[in-house]
Length: 501
Image (tube, rainbow, N blue to C red):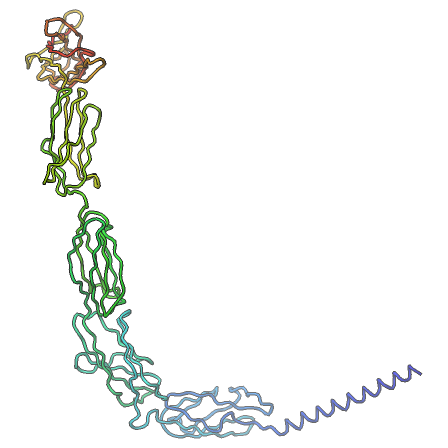
């Protein structure tokens, strides 16, 4: 029973679907029967130089491939049509066109209009100046038919000259050196048709300039001054310093003027160039001299001193600004002590005392800028003196057989003294001379020696020995030194030089 019911239900559903499909197919056939092959446009309206594409539509609403259609214009002087149905407007007028397909002809009309009516002209709405790229842009109202605009330019009332042809014309001006008035005219273009000239619009360009209220500034270190800078275009200027002796900072613009704050950082001269970012030929310069807050000159009344141990001398130290000064010694042979400023002057006094025998260099300079300084050379002489032999004199060196090997002429001797222990001294001798004899080849560099004896004031020999004058060729000069005594007491001595065997 149940199986029979299922078969009956399936049969009913199948019959129902069949009737629905038959109805749908009949509806499609009836709909298609009501459609005809037709053109997409019965009338085409164009301006000269415009284009438009015509299409032929089949019964199903789909575009028939253009190359299967034969297109034709009755008057190609007005408008022409390509094999693909592209219509091009040539000149004002009306022409008939046809499309042939499957033995049937389909007709349509093409009307070509004159782009501009009598008296119709574009109007310049705005003329905008851009300093950033030296450009003036001319904006016009849009003429429906215009594809381009011709821009004519007159400079300072001169003849109008065609400058450019663009949709939005712009005129690029050069970096000018004088004030200039530009006047513009614009007309629309479409094909071979032109609109009437537009109304004139002008723009006046002032000569660019940058001015400062002073071009020379003097500052001390840490001092600040404000300079006012004036320019036509406040947002196009910049500054640059040629070194780091100063620092700068812009303030706020007001009425085409802006303050520039300059601070002196280091002593020296700086040139600040303020220029137009877009036109480097427009600039102004400020020369800034930064003076040291200390001294720019430190001098002394004596640069060479000779002292005995325990002796004190006072020298004057001169400064130009009376600023702080320092004193450094190269060693402990002397002490230096400031005595104080001389009232009403920029002069300080320095007391120097000899402590140990020898030489010392004092460096005296500005405490803020050590490059500003001077030096004093101090020689501390002990209570000792050595008498030199009579010179010039010639001394010879003999071998152990008694033969003369070489001779040297001594022209000068000098003595230097240095402190030793327990208030005693060391004596160093410098000997200057020339080799005058060589028993071998004159080009041979052979040794030469001289003997010496050091006598005290009572005639006793306290030191003796020989000094090597070095190896040299005949005629060569020499300069040698040797410590000839150490730990000797203060007093007077005499040096004698002898031949050396």
